[in-house]
Amino acid sequence: MIMYRALLTVSAIGFAVAAGANSLISPGPQAKIARSNLSASPTFEWNKLRYRGGKNVEIWTMDGDELNKVSFYGAIPVGQPIFREADKKNAPLPRVTANMLITDIPALLESTYRVQLNTSQMSIDSQEPTLVAGYKGIKFTYSFIRQDDEVQRKGEAVGAVVADRLYLVTYEAPAIHFFDKDVEKFRQLVTTLKI
Amino acid sequence: MEADEAERALRDSPLTIRDEALNAYVRRVLCNTVGQDRCRSVRIYILEVPALNASMRPNGAMVVWSGLLLRVRSEAELGSVLGHEFAHFELRHTLNAFKRARSTTDVMAWLSVLGGMSNTNTSLSQLLLIGSFYRFSRDQEKEADLLGLRYLAASSYPTIAASQIWQHMMEEADATAIGRKKKPRQRYSAGFFDDHPTELNRAIYLADAASKAKGGNEPRISGHQAGIAKFLPLFLADQIKLNDFGGSEYVLGQLASATGWTGELLYARGELYRTRGNPRDLASAAQFYDQAIKAGYTTPEAKRGLGLSLLRNGQVTDGKAALTEYLRMKPDASDAKAISALVTN
Image (cartoon, rainbow over all chains, first blue to last red; front, side, top):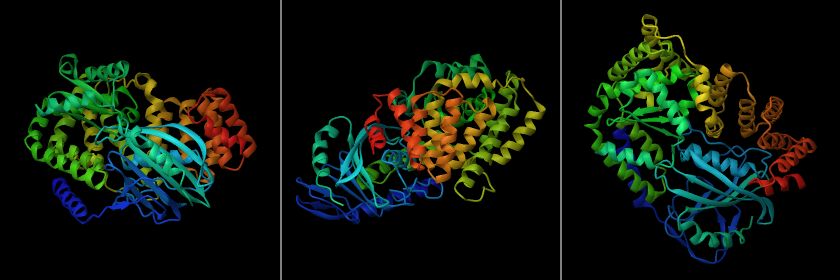
């Protein structure tokens, strides 16, 4: 039964890949990112993945999302998880809650990853206040290992809760070589965010 | 050969906990259970994975997940699980399971590639497939249960421990369900254990067998507590971040039933309530941190948790005072700048 289910999954994923159409993000203003009122104005070319991972999620990459990935989470309301839940019944994700403090944002991301991506080793490595599109928010760095590939990845993110909605933008890449290679492009992108 | 390759991956995995004392403790319990001669052939790998599981590879590599160490309450309970896994090895069950292994690994490789291309998380599928890789028939499970029980009967541990584990698993499954506002399960089966006899069945036939062969009378609860003491904070933190309020509360309650509510457990309970973050949770969390501090748990993190709970619950002055104390105790904390901003605003 499990084998049968696995084969079904393989064919379903194969279909998704065949039907997928990623698109080019040209330098210049980009509105309605993650189907929300989040916008940015990149100065480099990015690729936007057709795969989104959630209703208000958008993923950009340069060399493929396993190597460098920017995820936008736009205007996630109270009561919603940041990802689409892979197994809502047995592994429900934590939700955005009312009155979140800035330090609750990295904790929400960590718990979400631990449940959905099985990152049993994950740490938030630094947290400091920042302005996100002019709103008071948090900038934080983190590192994690997924159980499936055991690659040490690093992440950097900015997040803010504006009018009871969570805005979060993360950059992730393997700690070896790739993280440092493109992190400045991410930091530049963050300076252009608008809500 | 394949098992040896898999063992090399285990040896080098960043998830493997290499702490000598913890490994020596688990080995001691295995040896106490199955006997000094038998246990010599086993290599133990403890992985930081917060779920209850252990498995045995056909070449003598035993894998123990950290979630098991957090949940068993005594050396006897741990010994009964390790003895059960060792019984599969002695009965050559894993070798037979290997005959169907090749096709499973091929599917796993494909899932990895396709998952990477489409950004689909394949880790869960992999865990499921690995589960099928080493799964046994119900008859084999029962056979291993009963041989495991014979090991216990010959050891200083009481045999009733084997049945108690399944009882606790059912209670935890119920607590998880209730915490998620679902009906407690009528039929007890969870994840990896789907192919095993149901927990209820197991609890019953193991209790019955235990009444006929009682074994020793030393469960050694304090021995287990001492064995995992250094890692308890890590295992608790891993558990609390899993968004399983009911299950985590049950696990904490079980630990407290053995030791009382220590400062360490109260702190973890505060973290659990603060993480869920409903208004009433925040008030409870503040109480638990407060009790932890009064019980002698004086780490900076207790002040941090207390301050954040109070602040989020609208008790601004007291919250800021606790956070200021945290910053005084740990000025170079990785979140010092963010906490400082909360105090200033």
